[in-house]
Image (cartoon, rainbow, N blue to C red; front, side, top):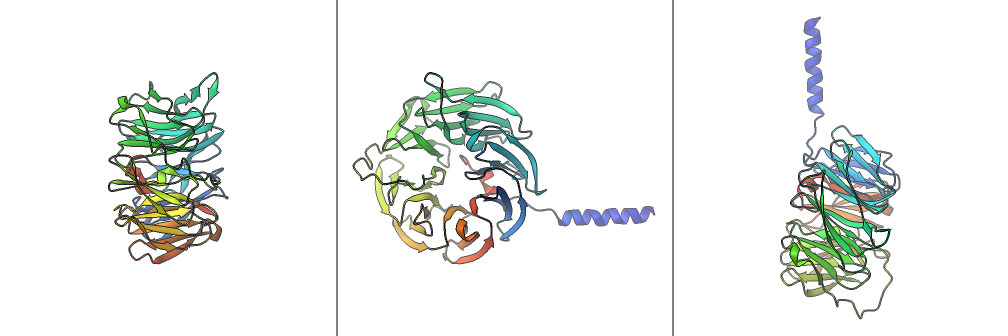
Length: 387
């Protein structure tokens, strides 16, 4: 009997080993309208599991633990959900605010910060337990509280974010989580609506909706304050309706250039990173939403707001020109490159599909079903700054 039990235990252990999966090629796809998240394998092009009941995911974003096992999903309803991607299950879920717009994970992977519209501010939680560590209300003026946007992690165990209503950038230093140090940069421009961190963690750039230009903070030289760049761009252009606000975390830094969407215009801006002046503009098919660089920075992929959101255009960085226009399907919402850039995954909402392309040949590789897919987030983001 003892031998039989030992044999069964050995067979069981083999079965457990057979079910193990690596985390480096996993990802999360948001099914927007159902409030679900798909766990996918990016190498094998497979759907592995569906995690349900994650609340309002109409503006969801995701960050990953440094070991890539856990995904943290930020929902629009203030939900913060920790998903175990090895067990295909929710590890913990809390409702931390009334209206949330995204979040970030700290440099050491121990803290999760969430930016909130309602009530305006940033809350910081333990990545392990989701217990509250700090509450930073975005107070300004006389009893006013601002919506917070553009929250990113920064080197030095810091978070940087923008206050939409106040026109400010704040930096929170969490080297000592019990007593975070807040540094405020006022008068940075009207209505910063989103922001990006350069891949090396050197620059934080906020887009301005209320006036022309961008707000630039040099994290290596904080004493210089915030610099207003491109202040005259679009000043005299005809004001066009904005069908969808650009997402600035999708801006592309490629070589000496920053590629950015022009708000409401059918243009991509090419900005010289050395002088922060406009180098060129590239005419594109519609109002750009995401402008994303392939990891080797040779290509920049652009998708668009309605009514041109059935297209994706590829910019050749060498020539600063459109090299190809693709038509993946109806309502292209998000794109994500595999870690070394040989493939790109595209969410096509109204066709209920994920489309995978070879970025060298620009040929379609496969399609996977997904119900109203929105954001695509790969676990390789765990090792990148500012995502």
